[in-house]
Image (cartoon, rainbow, N blue to C red):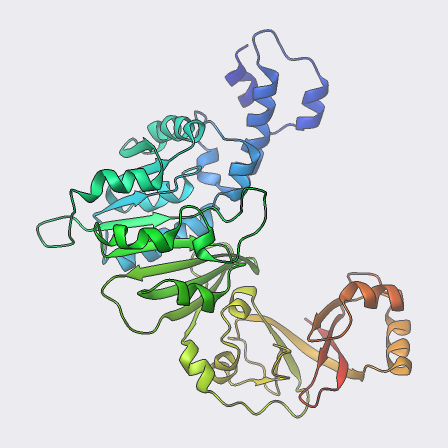
Length: 402
């Protein structure tokens, strides 16, 4: 039996149990186990790739850092719109595992995968042979690749193909620390942008959702659109669409993807957000709304209230309420059952009768873990409690059902 045959035969089996067993003669067990474990991740994260038996997968870290099929498809769709249709030339300066490159390439006439890690390049070259042989692989740094093509500048004109440069800079330092500034990431997008503009008018940058949106906008110019993308209410990435010919305010978009690329899109401008004046809710209505993670990250808190006709509980609580249900609100919706003042007697009485609840804190002095420990409340059940602060700074426990 060959190693490839062993992998295909056992790719759905328990890796730990396989590790305890003896491999057949001719099988590289260590490599097989790594590939089987990777396949099981790929099957969930990039299901279309799992259908191809001939692919080779990189180590665990590269898999964890790669995009999911859902986010990659959504990015490819946005980039196609940004480029005014298909048929452009695409350069991915930070190829990695090649997920984003592969899906963006489906709308491109030509694609270039650039990666400084030789092992990842070797894997990508092998995989693209089976997935999309038109993607050219370049084992070099982003800086070196740009230097090679800068002298042959290609402008976006009717006589030349339009170029799109995409990059996903590394977001951790040499010692694994998280970085907060774009210029601290590698490659340095801020430093490279003038050189990229010698090649193309349009650049798309993927960034960590941990980065501050206002700081990103201040560090980079010509950002036409900034997307905050979450999947299953978990914020995954920021996507910056940079257009050298765009000099107006950046439009912020937030979307929560579930099982398809057709999530509910919410858009706004930070200048409009700053100019808005809100009257906060004087009482908790019949319904409570908790925005999706992407919408919270967007910072468009007052714009959300204005757009969906709901009231904010407090400037910093980021929960909303209404008397009539707005089913279009981008987030979770709850029916309010009671509002309990957060004092010793009232809280003790409430938690004594419940025993179990799903607790969320928003602008509240205690963490969820502290509430659970103090009142001996187990997680789960059909009851939801929002521990939060109202407009007059009073602390309350809002008891809800989904």
